[in-house]
Image (cartoon, rainbow, N blue to C red):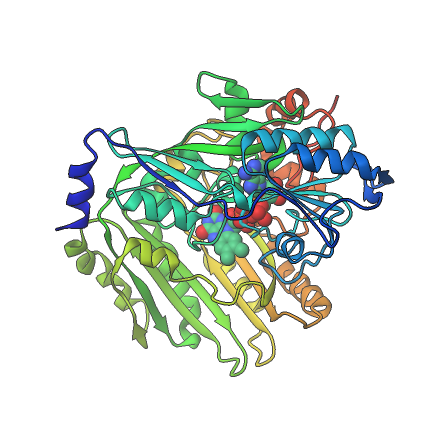
Length: 500
Ligand code: FAD
């Protein structure tokens, strides 16, 4: 029986649940299995503080989830992120099992004024979901999805990964916008905005958030929606992790054909200027169902420069050929991998099979157009090398993303049809200091063309640049921050500083 038909027909009244089993028993996990000595930690101001062993033990005993201490495998698993660049050591890691655990962890952090990091998928480019000496709240034990196909809604916990969302919703022929790597966290990606293969058709992830459950800095669990705490609801849609720990999201879903058409066209690198100019023009005329990305890059060991245009077409598959045909004229096509995909498989196709084996540094910024000058400067900054992986992507916005007013959510850059993402990468164990310095210098060649950056791509931008990227929405964001996090407990992010 057709899977989609089976699901649709069997859920007339039913709602589907998917819970990841909580295999670990609640525990204090460390070399001793209990808190045997006082713990040195770092406060919000960077001062050193000693946490009394019995107070920490009491806290650990009071929660259902895990309290992980240095010296255990589980602690090392939690503290590390995807990007091998970051190797930090929190004083304590809490793995909540529930919203009540998150409240307890936030209260413990606030009472002790502890530097606090919040981790979902661990993909942050700036490495701020872990920290040295503070408290890390690792949400990886809070992974569940509930789908209501009739109402086209999904509820998903704040520690979940995108692949879980895609898999459970597509089982009903439904989707919402999610990013392009399935082990990215729903938490971080959504709160910062959320671009994805279907974003031009259905808007950003935040445009589909109907409500959140969030533990704010006072430890209270609140609901934020258009009618409950509406300012908080406005702010969490683009303001990142600044306002609390989101324990659950409610998403609007959309009917979507499981089959989409996707792949890349490769061109000789010598034609890169003309190919990228074509891609910019073609993207500007694309229907909402079409996403057009462009790429240049070179990777060890051959260091051969490559240039390609990639596409995702999510309209009727039989129309794809005619819609994509003009790309053949962008240059001399060397290879073409475009084919029909299962959407969930496509969403996993860029996953790393060796997570944490790579480090990367990113420079990025929004641009108003893929003009010939922008492309010229990006190409001028690009130096193919057999020893250093470098690549640059032009993303594609617009469509439904651009039809939302810049002040309708905290994400202000609605009018930017593209951004530049430039990366340098290395294998774990390599000292990247020289590569990062080189990359910063090279990126200056094109940076003047950019205007603001996506806060989810935060790398090492200054606070002034972070303030500027929130643009006209900053004063309202500061008001919400003053109300819900006046002590700036949640500061390890693209920070909105309170003024009270
Ligand atoms: P984490 O490192 O776990 O969290 C990042 C930050 O988010 C934390 O510091 C915290 O402030 C906050 N946070 C996370 N969860 C919560 C929560 N539940 N409550 C409160 N705060 C929370 N972005 C796109 O828009 N589209 C893409 O297609 C895309 N692809 C990517 C692919 C890769 C391989 C990588 C590395 C990044 C990609 N990004 C993409 C960027 C991505 O959105 C950010 O890196 C994002 O921060 C990742 O979220 P995370 O939960 O995995 O990260």
